[in-house]
Length: 425
View 1 (tube, rainbow, N blue to C red):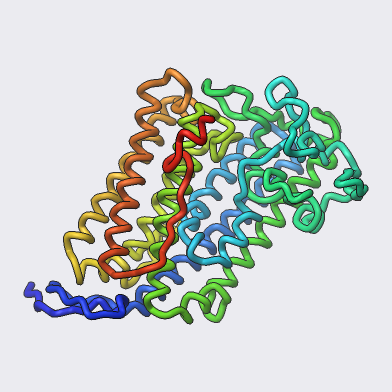
View 2 (cartoon, rainbow, N blue to C red):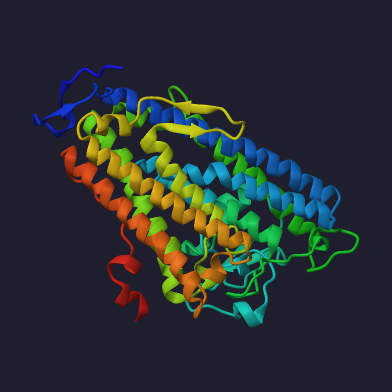
C-alpha cells in the first residue's frame, strides 16, 4: 500500500500550522458526527438496559425471593456498562451535565430514603437536617419549617420534591444509586470484603422485614420508571434534530473539538482520577466509593475509562455486539502529528491495563473498598497506579490541545490531586 504525503493545516487554530502527514485528516464535521452517533448509541443502550432492569425489579416485586433479588442486582450491574461509557459526554456539553445529576448523583445520604444502621451511619448531620428522614417510613417531611406531603411515592414526587431537597446535593433521591441502595442496602463491611446485604423480604408484603414494605416497593418502582424517563430524554437529545446534537453541530469546528477534549480530560482527571479514586484512597474511606452499596466500583471505573477511549478512537461496541464507528479525533491528530496520536493511544492502553487490574483484584475478593483500606499496601498501589495512568492520559490530552492550538479549555480538577493538604485538614 502506498501512502500519499500531504501537507495538512491545523484549521482549528485560527492560524496556519503545517506539518507532514501520511494521510488527509478527516473533516471536523465528520468527527463531530461520529461523536454524536456514539453518544446516541450509548444512551440508547443505557435506556434499553434500564428497561431490562425494570423487568427484573418488577419480577422481584411479584416474587420477592433471594433468586429474584439476585437477578435484579445483576440487571443493575449490567445497566452500568453502557451508562458509564456515556459519562465522557459530560463537562463539555452543559445540557448533559445539567441532566446527569438526576441519574448518577453520588455520594448520597441514604438515610433520606430508608432505614440505616445507626452504629455505622450515625444519627444526625450538622449539614443535613434530613440525614435520617427515611421517607419510606414517613408520609410527611418537615423542610425549613414547611410540612411536605410524602404520602404518595411517585416518579414526580421523587424528581420534583425529594431529589436534592432543601438544596442539599447529598439528598440524592433518584437515579442509579438510589436504586442501588434499594437493591443492596448499606454496605456495613467498611474496608473488609462484602457488599450490602438487604434481604428480599424487605419487599415482601406478607413477610415484611425492615418495615413499610409497601412504600419501599413503591419507591423502587418509581425510581426505576424515572430512570427510564430520564434516559429517554437524553436519547431524544442525541437523535437527529435533538437538542444536544444540534448544540454541538452548531458550534464552530474549533469549539466542537474543544468540547470533545474537555469531556475527555475532565472525566479522566478531576472526576475519575480525583474525586472517584484518589479521594477515597487518601482517606481510606469506603464512603467515597462510587458504587458503594454493590461494590461494583471496579467495573464502573473500567467503563468510565473505556468511554474516553471510545470517543477518541471513534468507535463504540454496543451491548448487542455491533459497532458504531466513524472518522475520529485520533485520525485527525494522527494526520498532523503521528507521534502525539500514538502517545495518546499508548496512554489509553496503559489506563485500560490499570483498570483491568482493579477488575482482576475484585475477582479475587479485593473490591475497591478493600483495595483502599489503610494498611493494604499492595491494594493501595493498584489504585494509585490507576490514578497515575489517568493523570498521564490527561497530560496526553493536554498535548493534543496544544497541538491544535485550542485556547480557553479548562479541565476539571480535584483537591485530592491539586491540593491534597487541604483534603487532609
